[in-house]
Length: 248
Image (cartoon, rainbow, N blue to C red; front, side, top):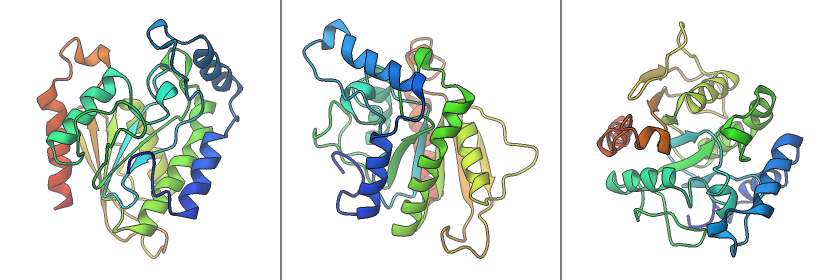
């Protein structure tokens, strides 16, 4: 998938249109559009996307990656998740090394990148100020991820693994799983790098396959984590190697 999920599917096209035209959160709308107008000096000659970002990847994926939100000068500029920033450089190199991506770089929509058995989404679809969405903004966005999971389950063998990049993605994944009727363990699973939680799938529902899922945690590949050595390349690749093991 080079530009987005399943362009042939009317259901995916409808959802992508709803996401990219959403203006539900005034603070986020104002911020993403200001960034797209002012721009960073190094990108001043580029046209920024400046809209919410739809999910990207294999529409029949067994693995779904949950990030936090688009970077102001990354996905908010390029229009594709984790594309055009250093977090994406780390993520797609790890996916390539683990056999989930056909190339190690994600530069722009239409660059030939294809994902296999992986779909990338995020808790929030607009770049938030200081990279911190409010609770209301977080909750406004969650139905988009819920619907992406429903579509993936409807068109493939079903989501088997969710990889949460950072604690914000971990918590949003748990909220989405609970809302869809999954049996989340109590006490609530705690986030950590390489943390692993078995999530029971609901029974007797047509919309969700009758199999359990695994939630995996990884430190977010932000510069704050990669520059300090909190997250190393082997640590990130190890999470996706584990995700592949869980699919097999």
